[in-house]
Length: 291
Ligand SMILES: O=C(O)CCC(=O)C(=O)O
Ligand SMILES: [Fe+2]
Image (tube, rainbow, N blue to C red; front, side, top):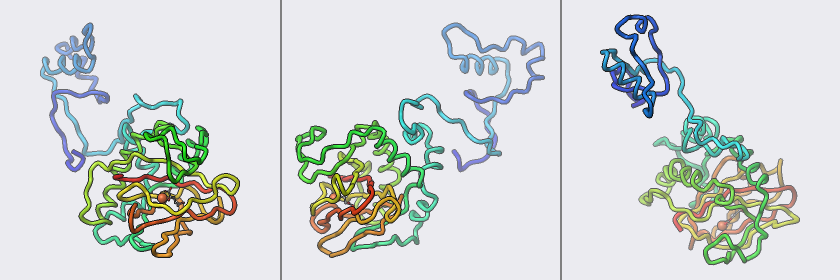
């Protein structure tokens, strides 16, 4: 629809009207109403106009802006805007998707590859990163980093991190939408010939590393076809040390950039570890996609 511009005669309009008042002063239109007991006022009003031969139009020749959907906006959340990816997509995208993201979808774009088959993309804005961390810290129930994890089906996590799962903060559905709409297109450009829509991801979590808590993560494989690892804060400013080392290639990504994601295969070739945070707090968001 947005690709077409014009003026259309339509039988029904809701939410937003521009009315020519003079019309309603004519005797034949005095009876126009929007009130019938038990019926939707929009329906009644449009029906009433149709019966009297008044034409209704939709016009998008000019951009007047758009309406937001306030129905699902839940002020009980910390940073409720970040929950709006489904119901207020345009606002969400403007606030949280990095302007640089769109370039990486262009045909000629060559993504950076800091280590073999580890790709790096700018995806979300600094505002996203700040608010995402705030949501986690406001919730505050970080796991204890032990192998026992009642959030998981088997109750056991082999390579535990101090983390918060998206389910715990009510962001699971939103995050899965993000993976489908923004991450999957990058994956399809990166790992050619692999196609899985929607991406499945059972493990979506924010990790917190601190020298006095969990400073690092031992070598492991992820239970994923591919993993995304989103840097939520800034090395050198918020923390020192940290990063991800891919052992087979003896290659580390330590100069991670806030709002950028690393995308790498999860198993077999990409045995990896989380390097030690020396000072401050490092936050990352991880998804094990297509386990
Ligand atoms: O610290 C990192 O960047 C790696 C994190 C990681 O490998 C994981 O959470 O599975
Ligand atoms: Fe990992």
